[in-house]
Image (cartoon, rainbow, N blue to C red; front, side, top):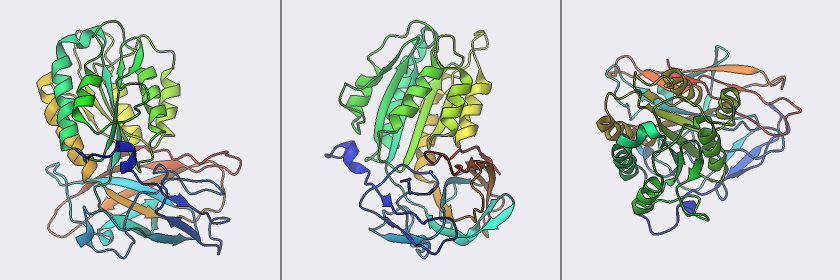
Length: 358
């Protein structure tokens, strides 16, 4: 484990913005300060940009941190995180920029920036501790620690425990950690009793992620499904997820005898945010699933392009990403399938991701 704090692991980038799309004014992004990823560049606001190499970088730079850089642009930027799988559902690495095609509203886009790097991630472990999860807690804790073991040592992690109440697992004043002993304690400080405030827990975790300066943000939700105690509505939390930068992976501990289960909801949260939903037959399988999620996160590609934007009407813009490479056969790409363009009057940019396999 690293000796510095988790917060120090994620450097920040501040961006200067062009006056409008297609204007002649250059925007400069400097690597001294960073903001969260996946926001659109919009007029006179700061957004996120992942730390990636320039479009001229070769594939030999994959999985290595990039040096300080300056990127110039004169249009709004859309940033995508993409997982590539082969026909056997195995992760595919080693692809280059030319092997990807990005379409917005069915129009082929020019990829301006590309990388395949393992960068620090802010990760929230959202753990159901309602009464029905009591006999699964030991396996859930072991799985969460397995995830931490395989994650980037510089990741910022936190825990949200919930039954009918939502609580942070880490001590007050410690928003994130990269230490397994602290994570173990955070996962072990609540008894599995009571009902389920699933929506409130997701809302709390999404808000907490805003404190991180990491480029990429992830939630891992482990629950037996359903909600019977939240003050937030489903519609409210879905909207929060759509406007968040977070990718949500869900692990559904479904019991057919439980009338409160809702596997469809878990699938929806994953699909809306570019994650994936898993439904193990036994809690013993959670560890291998969490290990797979850790590998997925660390092997994602980052693609960026500057679309031509003539009207800022807050409308939805569909995005499709495809990959093809000799010797790999059919490839599928999991990434967001669109975003809502902020309107001119919007006080802040909002990127919405609806991810799926192409």
